Length: 322
Image 1 (cartoon, rainbow, N blue to C red):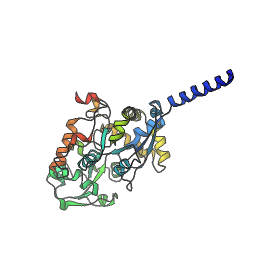
Image 2 (cartoon, rainbow, N blue to C red):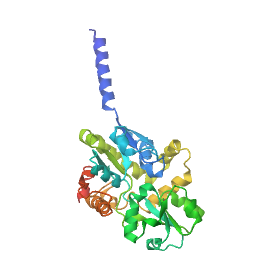
Image 3 (cartoon, rainbow, N blue to C red):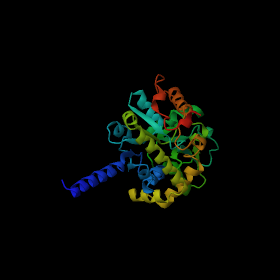
């Protein structure tokens, strides 16, 4: 073999090794809804090259009413999903092999819209309350028990705001980052009540993965959590890049809706409030998970024998135990 051939082979080996060293770990992240501000941190991490900096190739996929994130995760069609702690606890009750790894939303953006004649949540007695099917299996039992309401007050919420706007005796569920803007535009004196400010214990959108991925690729999951939280920090500081990608993925999204969503997240400190204020974005604690478990058990939503500590890991947040 000639010296030139040896050099070529050596160069090929070196180039191959370099390519392998820079290969990015692929992750499919399935969100809960179409691209919007509530997923801004993930789109920011893609657009700003944050995931790439952490050696990750993340495919952020939009969700919707026809998609079941839990099914996609368990069928290996997603590596990480955005879900909710109530759903994860129900999954553990059914022995699903999954675990929450971070809670970007320290507080659930869920709340209720009322007209100006409501001065406290106690004033909901006797009013019609529009609640979706998922709401009836999550926050409604908490609200009903907390304020002594009746199931007979509930009517279906079909994601159409006209019944609320047309009837001063009606209240409806709402997200702090979306329906509130529409309500304020139509009726400036309408009021929004964030359940988290009144003791509702649940987190908002949390990141969930399969137990096998945690066991086989803990370093990848660690980098994913760190990069995602860096994405959220960057998005709250300047959402320009994330919003550009959101509008590309969801052409119907407007600058005004995005700006309102970001403003609400910052004002209500949905991302950087709570335990995240001193323990870092995405942190989860035993205390919060137990509070949600206790609420669910007391409301008849969860078997009391369910091991709630199997629903999450704080391995990426050693400060959570402090």
